[in-house]
Image (cartoon, rainbow, N blue to C red):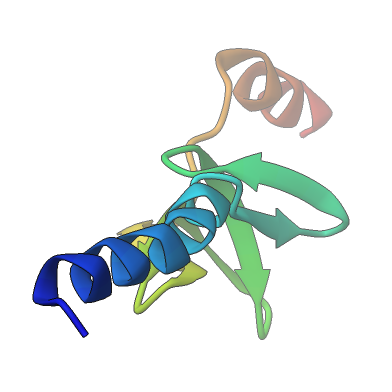
Length: 82
């Protein structure tokens, strides 16, 4: 068998796999997130900000920072409750 034909066959076999990698998403509380998007993950009573990324051909959450950003409006509401 010619080496060029073998290489071409391998490339053709990998194309669907590479195309599927771009369709990967992460899920958080039933909501789907695209690669690169961030979300607040709540785990074991705590929370942290995470980004949807690819790791070893699998979509996964990567911790960005402890805690989650709070909007200014939410902060105002909690201060008025007291």
